[in-house]
Image 1 (cartoon, rainbow, N blue to C red):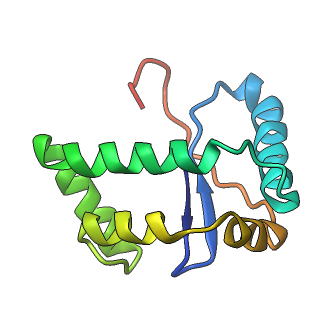
Image 2: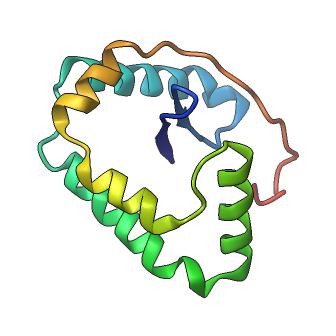
Length: 120
């Protein structure tokens, strides 16, 4: 899962990896950041992301826990909690805007260590 949080200037990528796989996961995220920054995006990547957002927005109301999690995250980040506003914003993003953001990306890492089998 990766998303740009414009209000805070953060590209957040969530990965669940075994500690032994962390170097490989870090290289993958760094590669994605470089890809975004140089504009070498797969031509369908933005369309696929938009389709995923449309699906998420359409089904958000079907899952009470998902809806509450959505509201908590958006409130925590100081963002509009209306999922339609998020979808509308995503629909307006251009590849040029993605490249501009990508050129400014750096990498900071936070870890949440969970026991095996915790389901998270």
